[in-house]
Structures are given as C-alpha cells and as structure tokens.
Image 1 (cartoon, rainbow, N blue to C red):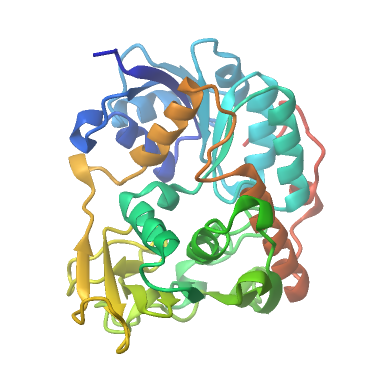
Image 2 (image 1 turned 90 degrees about the horizontal axis):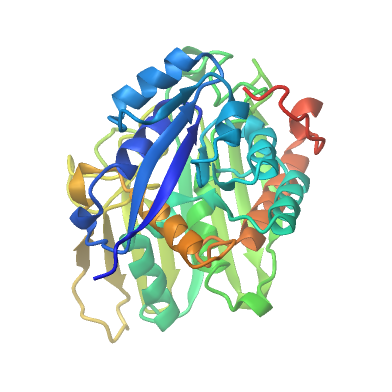
Length: 398
C-alpha cells in the first residue's frame, strides 16, 4: 500500500475556529476511514506575539517541532509550509490571503472568502496567475451528510426541488450579548458569515450543470443595529429562474431559529422536492454560531453548519416509503468535522488541482455577488479600508 500523501499546514491566526481546525487536522485519519492523505501542523502565527502562537500550538497538541511566529509575514515565508489556513475575521481575509498567495502558498480561507465580489475576483486572478490552490472553507459542503443529500437531490430521489429554506438566527438581547465590539456587530470586522446561503446554494446552484448555472435574482430586506449600523435582521429571496426554484435565506440577532433551545420550533433547513422534503430541526444556538440542525429528539442535536442528522418526509402521493426516515451521520474520532474539508484540500494538492470541484471559485464569486446585492439593497457598506481591493503588502495583517 502506498504511503499517504502528507500536507504540511500553517495556521494563520490563533482564535477559537483555528483551534478547532488544527485539532481536527491532528486526529488520526483512519478514524474516518481515510488512508490516502494525512496532515501535519508545522507552523502557526499570531499577530499579537510568538508566545501566543506557541501557546496555541501547545493547546492543539501540535508536534514539538512546529514553529511559532509573531507575524503573518514570517509564516508566509516558511518554506516548510505547503498550505495556509486563514481564520481571521473576514474583514481581513483579502489582505491575509494576498499575503500568502504572493508568498507562493496554497490557501484555505474561512468564509466568507472576502467582503465583496471585487476582492474575490482579485484573489482568484492572483491564485490562477501563480498556479496556486485557493478554496473558501465552506466546511459544511464536505460533510458526508451533505454529500448524501446532494446525491439524493441529483438522482431525483425527492423529485424536483423547487424551494429551500435556511435560517441563521441567534435570539436574545444583542445589546447585552454583542455590545458594539463583537464581530457580529462591529463594522470593522464585517459580521459572522454566510450560513443562511450555504444550504440554498449547495442545492439550488451547485447541483445545476456548470455550463448552465445562472446567478439568482435577489430581493432583500434589512433592518440595522442602531448602535453600529450592522445588519440586525435580514431576509433574502433568491429566484433561480432557469430552474423554477426559490431559496429563502434569513438571519437575525433578536429573534431565534430555536426560541426554547429544545428544537420545538421545527426545521432550520428545509429542502422541498415534489415527492419528498429533507429537513433538519433547529436546536440551541451557540452565541458564536448558527442555529443547530437536528432531526432527533432533544437533547441530541448538531449545528446547521456541522449537521449529523437529517429527515426525509415523503409527500402523500410519493412512491417513496410512506414513513418518515431519520438518518444519522455521526462525526468520527471525537472531531468537529473540519477534517473532511482538509482531506479534500490535501487530495487537490496531491492531484495538482488549483480548486475544488465541491466548492469552486466561480461559486464563491457568485455568492459574493449575491451578498453585494443584499448589502446594496439594505444600504449597508463597510469602511472603505475593508472594501478596498488594494493590497497593503505586510501592513495591517491583523
């Protein structure tokens, strides 16, 4: 048997998400039946200090040979690093990713890839010019559960899908929970992500033949958080005209997808086909993440960005089995599931690919174009230094 292909990772930023990712990298791949690739954490960088990076490496139990850096420039220059994982707030993704790409490093960058489509296009052009791998870290795409659902939809198991609902709402008092400095409401940090759009796009856009994909028509409404001007409540209808389908994506700070934290409210994600519906019930929402997706009775649950259960409900006229089906897809090795996207990156590097077929650069660009339209219709614009497509070199690499 051939030895597994080894990828040497550098971790840029040392916060909670980076910690989760690095710990997942170091879980034995055999626990998830993977034998063809493996991962090493060889370096990490904090913009604060080398000590913070050393503490991070110790926390994730990286090898003692892993190097700690006190600047992102040093990490990008490390010749022992194959690919860099970027987990800074997405207000800084463009500058951080440009630094790494210009240093000749492959990049896996957290979502959203940038704050606008213009920045995404510059990153894509830079990666292509330098023949480097670049991917937006939409880890939900790589979960076996997501793969199963996409396969079912592609085969027509639930008929033709005409509508997808997805919600990403927190609930509670944002003034007390978020204040003015948390990334969810701080305009200098640009918010918390694209979770509502993730399920809509992976079903209604990604599964269309690539040559016939068309960006959806966008209708959005937005209410602002008066303390900072960030979006407080946003609802988006996406009209995929060519496939006669709608995606409805919602998010809110003051209202919850799961108000009683017990999953009583019903599904946070609904994929509605002509012969069946696939859904996940919402459960408690961590203050830093999205409502949970679960179809088993509480307290068993899993978040919508990292689902482990789903339900299939046949229509009354369907030829499918009449009973509702409950499907469990657990995460192996006591991990969080971020290792699946890392495995996909490793295989792309091994095979000489510069982008993933599961999360393409074209799709990342289209999603950013949709988000630009949502912000324009809601009158939301980030500070100019965040929106800019000018690369600052090693400056402002927080």
